[in-house]
Structures are given as C-alpha cells and as structure tokens.
Image 1 (cartoon, protein in one colour):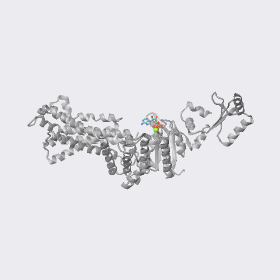
Image 2 (cartoon, chains in turn purple, orange):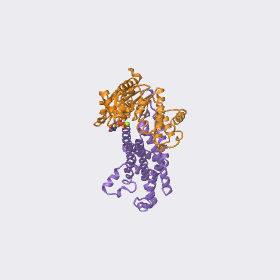
Image 3 (cartoon, helix red, strand yellow):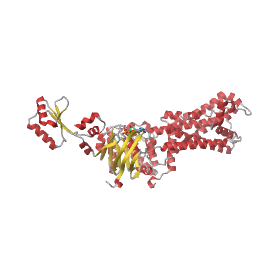
Image 4 (spheres, chains in turn purple, yellow):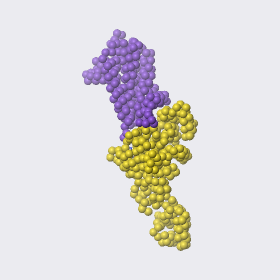
Amino acid sequence: MNAAATTHPLRDSTTMVRRNLKRMVRYPSMTVQLIAMPILLLLLFVYVFGGTLGAGVGGPSGGRAEYINYMVPAILLITIATTVQGTAVSVAMDMTDGIIARFRTMNIARVSVLTGHVIGSLIQAFLSMAVVIGVALLIGFEPRASFGGWLALVGVLAAVAFALVWLTVAIGQTSQSVEAASSLPMPLMFLPFLGSGFVPTDSMPGGLRWFAEYQPFTPIMESIRALLMDNPVGDDLWIALTWCAGIALLGYVWAKKLYNRKT
Amino acid sequence: MNNAAQLAISVSGLRKSFGDKTVLDGIDLNVPQGTIFSLLGANGAGKTTTVKILSTLIAANGGRAEVAGHDVASDPDSVRAAIGVTGQFSAVDNLLTGEENLRMMADLNHLSKKDRKRRTADLLERFDLTEAARKPASTYSGGMRRRLDLAMTLVGNPRVIFLDEPTTGLDPRSRRGVWQIVRELVADGVTIFLTTQYLEEADELADRIAVLEDGRLVAEGTAEQLKRRIPGGHVLLQFSEPSGFQTAQRVLGQDAHSDGDALALRVPNDGSLHSLKALLDRLDHESIDVDTLSVHTPDLDDVFLALTGDSDNEKVIDR
Ligand SMILES: Nc1ncnc2c1ncn2[C@@H]1O[C@H](COP(=O)(O)OP(=O)(O)OP(=O)(O)O)[C@@H](O)[C@H]1O
Ligand SMILES: [Mg+2]
C-alpha cells in the first residue's frame, strides 16, 4: 500500500449513499409502488378481514380495533420486504448498467459501493415504515409502547432491515436481469403470512404450524408486537436478534464475495 | 526503452481462459509512457478481456502484467489509483444527470468542492454536454452517453487510460472530437491503450499497433511497419484493347496477374516514384496503350484481413 492507494471509506460511502438517495428521488414510481403495497394490505386486512379475524386473536374487545393492533408488525415486515425488493432491483440495475465495472476499476473503498446501497435502503425503509405507521394510526392503530419501548422497536426494526438489505444486495448481484431481481425477494413477502403475522400460529395445521413457529419472522413479529403493546418480550427478542445477526452476516459475506469476484 | 520505469504498461506471457476456451495464450507487450498503443482484433479475439485484466476487473490465469509500475494482481489498488477506464459498454448512472455523474466521480476522486465545480464545468464544456448537463443520462443519445462516459474517466486525471472501442457508434464529427482529445491527453504525457474496430482510427492515432488473433499477438509495430509486412501495394492497369492486354502480359511476365475477366492487370508495386517510373518505362518501350492506371497502397484494412481470419484471405498473403 502506498500513499496513492489509500482509501477513504467514510467519504466514499457518503458519496454512494447520496447517489442512492438521488436515484430514489429520480425514480419515484418505484418508491411509491413499494409503499403502496403494504398500505393496501393494511387496508385490506383491517377492513375486509379485520372484523372476522379480530375475533380470533383474543384480547379484551376483539374485532377490528384489536386486529389492527395485532397485524401492524406483519405490515412493518412487509414494508421492509418491499423496500429490499427495491434494493435488489437497484443493485441489479447497477450491474446491467455497467457502472459497477467502473467503480471496480477505481481506487475507492471497495465496500462503499455496497454500503451505499445498504444505508440508502435503510433510510428508505424507515421513511416507508413511518408512512405506514401514520396510515395505521389514522385508521385506529393504538400502540401502547413506552418511550423506551419505541427506542427498542427502532433498534429491532433496524436490525431486521439491515439483515434483509445485506441479503438482497447479494441477491441483486446474482440476478441476470432487473426483472429477475425484482421477483427474487418475493418469498420475503410471504413469510409474515406463513408465521404469526396475520393469525396466531396455533390455528394452523401440523406441518405448517411447525414451520410457522420456527421460521425467523415469527419471533421477530412477536417481539415487535410485544414492544408495540408494551407486553413482556421474553425469549422472542433474543431469538429474533440472533436470526438477524445470522442473516446479516450471511448476506454481508455473500455480497462482498460476489462484489470482489474476479472471473 | 529497456528501462522498466519508462513503461506505462508491461505484459509478459499473459494467459486467460474461460473454462475450456483459451482466449489469451501468452501475450507480451510493452507500452512506453506518453504513447498510444492500439490493439486490433476480430470480434471475440480477446481485446476486451485484455483490457479487463489490465484494469484489474478480472484475474489472468498466468503471466505477469504491470500498469503504471504496479502489478495488477498483487497491488490492484495502486493500479486503480493511476488508471482510467472507458469500457466497451457504457458505464454511466442512467438515473443521474450528466452533471451529477461527473460530480459523483469528482467526489470519488476526493477533489475539493472548488476543484469539483471547476472540473465538472470544464469537462461538460469540453465534451459538448453543457446544454444537456441537467438532464438524466437515460435521455442521452448513444453518442452523448459515450462522451459522458469518457468525461467521467478523465475526472481523476488518470496517467494511463484504457479505451475499449471509444468511438464505436459515434458520428464522424464526434469521432474526430474524441481523437483530438486523445491527442491532447498524450501531449500531456498520458498513456493510452486503445482497442478499436476502425483501422483508420489506429492509423490516425496509434504509435504502435498490435493485432490479436487466436490468443496471440500475430503482428506488432507502427502502422507503416505493418503495412510493409503485407504485399498489398499494386498498380492496376486497365486496357481498352485485348492486344495491348496480351502484350503487357507478355512483357511483364511473372509480375502481372490478370484481375478477373476484365482487361486489367494487377502489378505489384510499392507506389514509389522510382518504381512507378520503371513500370511506365517498360510499358512505353513496347508502345503499349494503357487506358487507365491506378496506384493502390495497402491500408490497415489489408493488414487486418491478411493477418486475421482464414481461408478467404489466404490469397492476399500468397499473392
Ligand atoms: N465471462 C466470460 N465467460 C466466458 N467466455 C467469455 C467471457 N468473457 C469473454 N468470453 C469469451 O472470450 C472471447 C473474447 O471476448 P472479448 O470480449 O475479449 O472479445 P473482443 O475482442 O473484445 O470482441 P469484440 O470486438 O466483439 O468486443 C469471446 O469468445 C468470448 O465469448
Ligand atoms: Mg470487446
């Protein structure tokens, strides 16, 4: 390493984050589409299914009001899932545009290209979740979290978003086209349904119930729900954070390996 | 030129294969600082592969390559700090404007705010993009995008520049504009490694040219040296009368070849005044009536066709 080859990871990452935020602003139809999906699901589940499903989730009052409090965590995860779908598309666009090839021939902190996507997407995820929570509050969502609870909630959501974003930064690099990239993270959208997102897992048949109880989204949604409703979180929080750490590590290592490949 | 410090690019025994397919099979080349080197080759010959290896994008399977005094395999970051690359396919951010693309490059090259502003404005002006500066690159024409791509490469003042088919798809005026910029860069001491499909371009710009074929460099030298390597120069004599044609054929004997069915003879000739005069004297001596006479000197197209590809062009070499 000589003087000419020293890198500036912080400065380069800032440049890359700015680039990604600009791209989101420049391509608003995508952002709108990514926020619209969870909001539509929210309205659908609250107004169409809420009356019936609310009776099944227990609680003092039951019905629609109780149901919205139950399903907001799932909607938040779906918001993160749609955001990372955007991440995959954005990364795949970079690959097909050839701009990644340009970055690779430049003496910039290698990881900054990826952290640019990661931090940009985290910002987008939090803005989207704020909008979604705003809509939920308008239609009757009544969180009971304390201030500390909200802080913990932000931490958990950040951990989940961080993990899933790294995973899709890798996935985006593997896909051969932008179209393929947009469909690869689809399973993430379904995981809240195949867990305790919209109905309690004990209402499910054997095999599915087993999957629902052990898949990562269930402890994550249980933790978010407990924090929002100011209930004790128990072991779910540690299980959730362990899952996040594992997924983040896998995504990070995989994404870096793909970025540094030289074939 | 033996001094390694004077070489901007130095390659020996470079090999690369993709699976079973050997693309580069032992390439040696040296490019002195401040010169233009042009790599020619048919489609799929391995030009882009060579550029990718030298610009640290992919790893070679064997051999050694140094760029700007640094080994591409063991010290890629130092190589990256010295080079600029304009690849065969455009590498601009289509969602950003031209100006934003250049500003991003300035930031990634760690220029100060003041330098960034000046450099961006300079390059927009120089590449005739000032008017389109605030429009997203996705709305640019192919030529504009190509120019923006090149401008982005120059932001960091690289000492060695790789241009992979930089003028493909440009109109003749833009192409000359790029040539002019390349000449200015070299005048400032920058080294250029250029691949091109336009032989005119290599002829116009390059100090040295190499031809890549079947994974090896089959020829290397100045444009003049390469042209001399193939016996492409000839004089075409056109006769109006069969009698003149036959007499000339007898007089010139071995030297002359009939050119198709027409009453025309193709006589090898290097086009110099001396050899032309000698030919004319022979014809005049026999009072042969020549209808028209035209001189053909070989161009790089002849060189290219003779050195690359097979069967069809064999006769060019045999002639
Ligand atoms: N990643 C890859 N995997 C497999 N084969 C490859 C890969 N990249 C290039 N090749 C093969 O290597 C050969 C050389 O390709 P390259 O792009 O270097 O050619 P080129 O001389 O630049 O051609 P062109 O004039 O068409 O740009 C081609 O046969 C190509 O199919
Ligand atoms: Mg090529």
